[in-house]
Image (cartoon, rainbow, N blue to C red; front, side, top):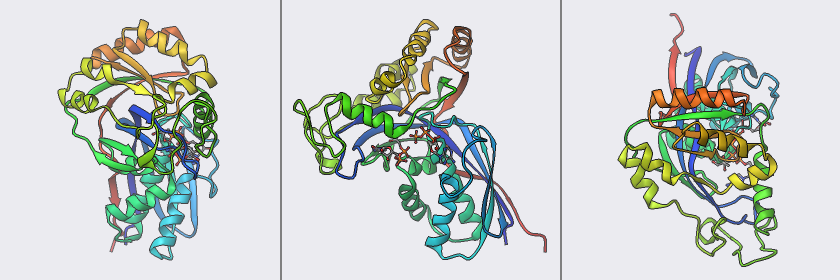
Length: 330
Ligand SMILES: C[C@](O)(CO)[C@H](O)COP(=O)(O)OP(=O)(O)OC[C@H]1O[C@@H](n2ccc(N)nc2=O)[C@H](O)[C@@H]1O
Ligand SMILES: Nc1ncnc2c1ncn2[C@@H]1O[C@H](COP(=O)(O)OP(=O)(O)OP(=O)(O)O)[C@@H](O)[C@H]1O
């Protein structure tokens, strides 16, 4: 029996995020390019009765009951695999809460893998990925990590080849943004009702991911990642990548949080190659040339006092992985 397992899963930034009009289920078809970055959630899973959760680091005020994504992940795995065992989860969070970096999703992915190992459920990565998609659109990516294109709700992943390491400066806000609220603001901006019907203008309604109109373009085409971004990732050149950062949720995030305009301007003044709101925000990711440049951009952004915290990270990094497995003594 394995009494204790430690798993680490990364947060993400969206290098590109294209959003179509909402489907009848309320979800928006996406075409996104995820990059996993070196800001991590660590989950220690120990054999116990029942499912309990302790949170360290960020998010100490998050609920630890069944509304927490980590607890939901453990319970879903328990139901699906039919194991009759419990787990005491200890979660150490580095990823900002409600920051557009999928911290909760990383917690869920790490918990799925940790409990799978702890309980010996024997599910493969594919079955874990299916459970991950049930828990949230961003959870499958936290399992796979590195670089991937996400379509559908963002949960249908295609691995993407990326060369080199990219250096980012993250501007983290003290208060997060609600992902559903940002999608609602997107709908309002594009004259869309929650079920995808266009109230104004010629934005096509979507009945599935394949027939969605592109959000920003407002056309009838499915949202699509620009092939030039895929080529940029092969170049290993941050100057090339910088030209392709884009996010359809940036404008709605800015509408809800106008101060993010100051953060983007500060990144520009600090000499970042480009800066973009990550996912639904409010974290801003600013791209640098290399590690010394990132340190310099971070220093100038810190002095500008536009964010609660300025961090430097690199990407891409691997998805959820086991760091330590303690075996029972015989
Ligand atoms: C904005 C992104 O971070 C981009 O990577 C993700 O799309 C968000 O993924 P997530 O937080 O894992 O999303 P979920 O927990 O599945 O959904 C939260 C809420 O976000 C909205 N949502 C999410 C994903 C999507 N493709 N369309 C949506 O409209 C819905 O209102 C949903 O109820
Ligand atoms: N383990 C968890 N960690 C963080 N938030 C959680 C967790 N479980 C549930 N939540 C709820 O989910 C909300 C958003 O969580 P999260 O930190 O993943 O946001 P996010 O990074 O903006 O997500 P995404 O980028 O996937 O939209 C939180 O405000 C909180 O109410």
